[in-house]
Length: 64
Image (cartoon, rainbow, N blue to C red; front, side):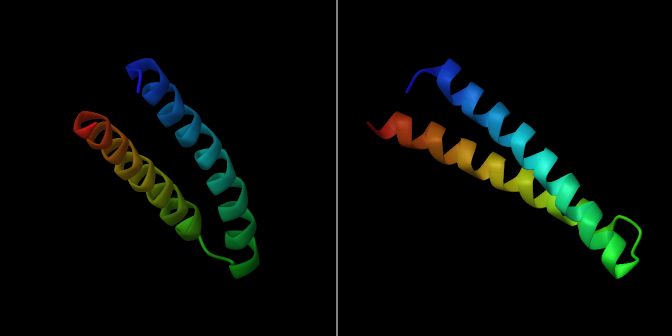
């Protein structure tokens, strides 16, 4: 797979995932009356998950 395509997919994943994580996390935090705990956890999940998928895409591309 082309390097630009992999980078583009990674950036889109991070941006969309972060926006959703912030929006959903804020709503849950308001409902549970916590101080951004769920928001931070969801953002960490998005970032780590996106990095794992990036590594998998890169290593899968090298095998083929």
